[in-house]
Image (cartoon, rainbow, N blue to C red; front, side):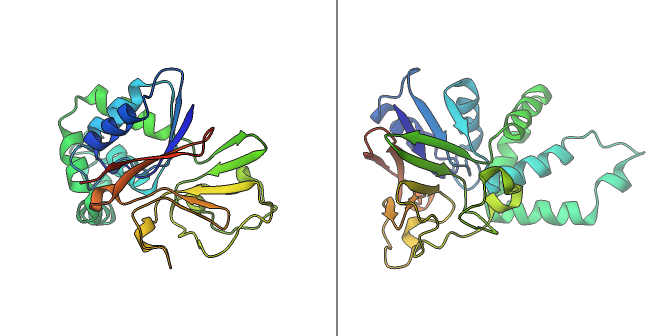
Length: 237
């Protein structure tokens, strides 16, 4: 079976409970829609678990990208020769903004890793997909983290760039693809904030499947099964 899960945000216990509930095995595949890190209690443990599994497909989220960008720069050894060029005011400002936006727990746990563990983790994030396309029974599921900036229906997925996938808030009131068998599958926007929905449950309307059920904010962590179209939930924090 193939499953899709949205923003885990460091909710390691809920992530493990969800894998157990769907009886996830080596024969299955799990697509993670990004924002694995920040805000929740154990973001590094979630990443470490994903890294061990060859059947987990990681799609980059904006929080993962920010972590990678900052930790890549700050993991460089600071010397007398480079400190004035490397530790710029802009870098330190970005770092402080990240800490305030839920990155503190990630930064603290990442700092406890060995240098080689840090590099392996950053390489893993760098290798994440920007999107995935899954087909099943005549249906096509286009998986991204946030949405599609600069969208047009006839634009191929590989024509979008990095930032087109990471920040755009999807308009769930609008059908993006006119073909009824194409679905845009997203995280990023908590479903409780979707207009005229307001529930911590998966949203499936207008050709959308929205999977961020706000686990880290007291909602749920959800898995959508491609083959059965069933949804499995575990309670969030």
